[in-house]
Length: 161
Image (tube, rainbow, N blue to C red):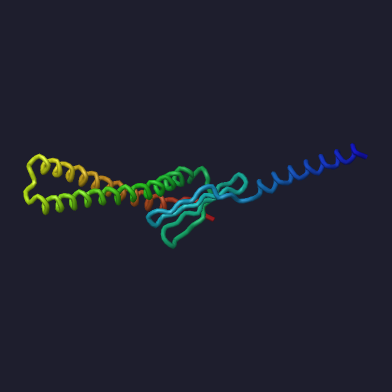
């Protein structure tokens, strides 16, 4: 009697374990999603197939990943990820530039005449910060253009649902 119960419990456990794996295999899993600069993507996996939801503002499209479009999808994903970081970097560089200019204005009010040593230092600091801000703006602009290019290229490649 005891042995039959142990065997019954083992059989039930084995059936439950195999049933859970089949449920997990058939479910849809969201692997990653990101939104930046009006562009967005979401990667879902259904069994062994990857489906992408890409969009720009209100235009949203669903694409199945294939050999023809996987490179463009990966580049679109990287570009959207870069957009959010570059936007933050640009905002921080402009904020730093404004902070330096406000510091100079407040220092000039207090000291009327700024000595040539600190004046030269602030000019160099403003120049470097301004160049960095222009560079981050240029990178941000290029990333927007890249995202637009990859978005429209993906719409022209077969694989759309």
